[in-house]
Picture 1 (cartoon, rainbow, N blue to C red):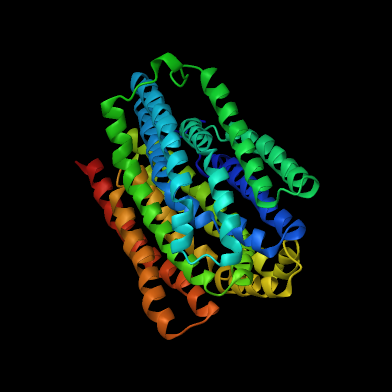
Picture 2: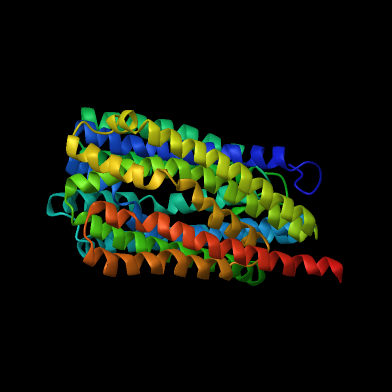
Length: 444
């Protein structure tokens, strides 16, 4: 895909569509995990599988942020036409992927129980949750290889092959879920084993693609090395993004801790509703990645006016697509919830969360797309700081002040839309200021 010339709307859509489908399919198969244990095991097992996302993201997001840095760096080099540096960046990124995956494997296994204990996980859920997390983190090296490898492919505009990986691995995951839970009665362990197997398949396919890719993107194992220039460039972009996501996840861990205080039905209901939030978010995330890639390439080529068009088009498409999807889930919530549970108390909590959040979910675009455009310009620290204060700090203050005075499940959930609006206003303002600064370069 030539991102530097021609029309933008169709290319942004064609890049974002496979990304959205990839993430939605991945979440769909993760949703199968929650649905299978909810239908064929227990609400406690469902709560354990569905509520661990905040913990996983807390430990994982720093390195996912660095993979975003790899995307930006390689896309920028593509815009400049610097093939030699593209090659060194590819090998640096994949070495970082392997090392970080091994680190996360041991870290996750060691801290699973202490974190879940600190989160006030209900006693009837914690053993299931610890088991799920420890098995899940066995697959962490493969998760990192897939994420970094997919970032390399996406930097050149290839979003189809990562989609193919997820389709195949997702089918395997869903099939293994049914066999291991229904036939072998492995419950939480079964869905965790299925997830690890799917991640092994993802990593294997991405490695195959990169090993057989054309130059300068081809991966050669003997050339794996961390080049200082490329590594520092990736870290400069990726660490702020990763730290932002980590702090964001820490705030969500605190919210999850507060949710745990309402019992296993509330935790399970929240986990059910969270699946539909993920589906809507992944549409936003797809346009995020398209924004980063298009902006990085065009910024590297010095086409600043084209960067402005990328922002407007991506924002409009993402607001429309995510808004339609989230409202569809909202209006059909009774049907969608029934796919996951037949327990009335769990369904009631799920419906409450969907009404509170899905109504205004499109507001996320204001800070997500704006932040991605800033990262494409090379400004990674600014969106990180805004998100930390506008979303994370605000949520923590809400949990430890407002929720102490005004208790209730719905009151706790109100922090999400409030933090979205505050962060969105700040991020759009920052984008407009920095955009003018960038465009002034063309006048000199």
